[in-house]
Amino acid sequence: MNFRISILFLLLASLLASAAQAAKLDFDKLKDAKEKLKVLKEPSEADEIEIGKGVAANLLGAAPPVNDAKLQAYVNRLGKWIAMHSDRPDLPWHFAVLDTDGVNAFAVPGGYVFITRGMLLRLRDEAELAGVLAHEVAHVVEKHALKTMRKGNLTGLAGDVFGKYAEKKGKEEFTKIVSAGTEIYARGLDKEDEFAADRAGVVIAARAGYDPYGLPSVLQTLASINPKDDAVALMFKTHPDSRKRLELVSNSMEGRLDEYIDSPRVESRFSSIIKSHLSSYKPNL
Amino acid sequence: MIAKLQRLRIPYVLTVIVWLLAFAAAQGCAEEGASTRETVPVTQNAPTPTSVIAQNSATNKITGAAVKETGTTRSAVELMTTPYRDAKSAGQLPVNTRVDVLERRGGWLKISAQGKTGWAKLHQVRAGVGPEGRTSGEGLAILKNVGQTGRSGSQGIVATTGIRGMSAEELNNANPDPAAVKKLESYSVTANQARDYAKAAGLKEKNVPPLPKSE
Image (cartoon, rainbow over all chains, first blue to last red; front, side, top):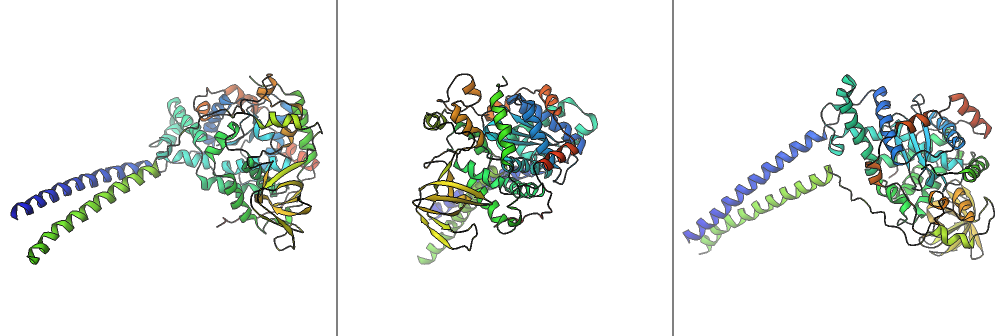
């Protein structure tokens, strides 16, 4: 009997030891995670614009702007008007259509907003385009990409990297920040930020005088695309389900924006711009 | 004997507790890892066997921009006589019914099928035909008619191998193009240019309060 009891104690002791080890490991991991969870200091607006320019150069390296000055002027007039109805009207806003068949749109810190040609060609009218641009403008205004970059655990940025960049304007920090910033577009933002940009986007579009249901109409379109279609692979990977987005933004809008639904959708101007683009389109290789 | 057994049980109980603690700690670690480190598998760009564009181009005649829009019901739909939640019913349509989309108004679509016409909410109708139907945008509708799909189409390759998208790898491996940034900066416009352009389309600024988060 004594023998059995001592075996039990031995077993117990070894278990306790391993548990203690596990607890220590756990504690170390926790400390590590806490360190990484520390939110980095926010860069100044001037630095945000510089960093945005670097990230924009990377995105344009992956897909060049469509070689159509008339089309680019069109999205810039529209985009600027929309941004003027946001909370950061004075940023140096730039808009561009990217020459890729992928269906997507991107918001880069500092005011660079991109929509792909694949997305543009799936839109019905200007109110839908306004809705997409307003969603992206909302991301910039609410600094969603920047917020993601500042979470060191997600991007691998650590310490006072923005502060160091601000001080020395070092090339090394700049490259580090810009490459971490570019990765966000392959991985996506927090899904709550996407829902927030949908809500803010319909409001900005309505303030700019458009039918606020442009964005929900686009979400209906996206929800109808075969998810196996190559063109939507990246967008679907980086965004919450379009049906969920449509449901949530519709619920938020329910009964609140009805007085604006007769605002223009601007079909004819959109249609003639698209037709003229298609008739002169040459791929930007 | 019973007393001995009871004494023996104490270490057993302790062992169980220790095991449970160790298990809980391990679970905690796993969860911590999952929430702080987001590893998303990169989707392979497997080409789709046949593009819908190519399939449709044969059946669509050139009709300019006004291509009739069709859709399919996602669920059984109660049609409304007017685009309001508390409107009167205009009949029901079963799930997966092919419908014609006649009009869009706010969050509503005026649809017609099986001799019934009425309003349905945006989320109740999938744009395009069939369970994996595809939508008709203004530009795509024109392209369908012409039988080309932009980049690949204009190179003479009809889109039978799927559309080239912008992949995560392409993004991560991209070489920066600062010249393209310069070029797009040259397209930027002034507030006055934007204002004039908005005015030309009859857009009027509105005061709109922010929206609350939905449940």
